[in-house]
Image 1: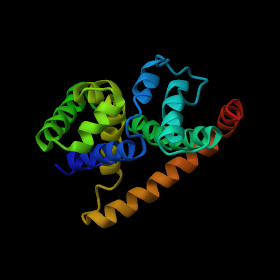
Image 2: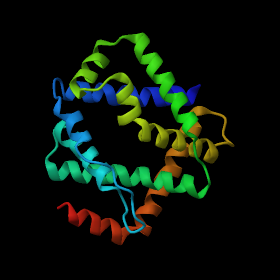
Image 3: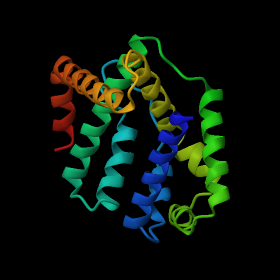
Image 4: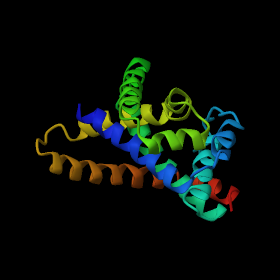
Length: 195
């Protein structure tokens, strides 16, 4: 139940953030749909699609310069990739059914609340609530569920939620630092492509 609340809180926060910063901006959904995702080759550190998608958000919603938006996107995605890579090493995964269950829960909750903010956001993004969760948020929800499993795995010996959160944050920082160190050359080459 707590995992669902965490995912729901993250989704609602993202929705409100986009809403506040992009009222009436229908080009966001059009932009996101304008290019197809590409598979990441073994030599690529990050998917170009994910970089562009998140950089667009930082630039047009968070009002960052194009360069700053791209670098912020790369940094955020590298942190996510470090966590996902560790989860993969530990053979943690979530099924499509688990992702769909979370999406269904979030959609039902969102439909019941009939929030004017959510309605406005969906209109601004030119998405239905189903499209938002199925097309736009599906992979990020999967990644968040995997991160939650990794967090539970690494903090299972602790009972206090605050202590668990502190331990997880330390572990996450270590994972990110190790990932950045191991992939330093590739990351620097990636950043140079976007300068």
